[in-house]
Amino acid sequence: MSPAEAGVVLAAALCGRLLAGPLARSALRAGFADRPGGHKGHAAPVALAGFLHALPVLGPLLAGASWGLVLGAQGVLALGLAEDLAKARGREIPWPLRLLGLLLASALPVLSGELPAGAGALLAASAIAFNWFDHADGLCAAAALGPMAVLAAGPAPELLVPAGLLLGFLFANAWRPAGPLLFLGDTGAQVLGWALPALAWRAAPAAGLPELRLALAVALLPLADAAGVTLLRLREGHPPWEPDRERHLGHRLAARGWSRGGAALLVLTLAAGLTLPALL
Image 1 (cartoon, rainbow, N blue to C red):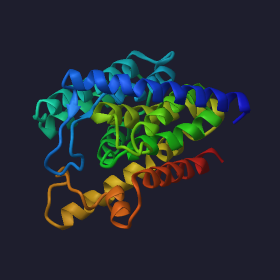
Image 2 (tube, one colour):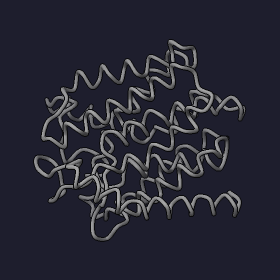
Image 3 (cartoon, one colour):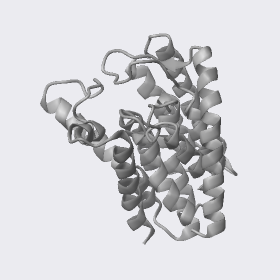
């Protein structure tokens, strides 16, 4: 990454961090917040406006995209917002409906001929995995920022600004000593999980890279975590979709004494490291 490109990332990160406070206050006043209780670790409501730091990733993805990719991304965004609005009111959308929505949204790019059939399944699985990976402060954003930084320095320089804004989010979440100002929410987590493999699939041919290998690489860490947690829950007789505070990577790191910021930095590094081999 050149000094000019690094400057773009840092400027975007500063903007993202400065916007975090006003966004959080506005969301809390509107009641758009994740409330404590149950398996959640926070003791006070946290604004769900962090998804706005994730949305810019859709710009590079949808530039020149087919109708299927555009409508699919809009569907994932609408589904996430519906989930977060329900969460802010102390309710939940039943998981079968959420799963059906993600599957339908992921099928649209396939129907429009933008992506092959296997890519649709990967997009849906990745959106779910990133959402599950959002189980500790900053981990989902870090798992997305690692691959985004690798792609921005390689086949997708248009990700420089989105990566910088997500970096700003981390300074308002995992790397903020007083606790998180913002959460990504289901909206931000699902948008990142859906958009990153789709973007990698589109960017790979121009760089002479295998599409499936790169798309899998950018989502590999959350996918591996989701697969491991699912197997553990099934083995112990629990439904795979039942949340907990023990089995995910973030839970295990916390149990070993990792701080919020340290865990996010480790995840960022691991996610970037898993993406790099796909560029070779």
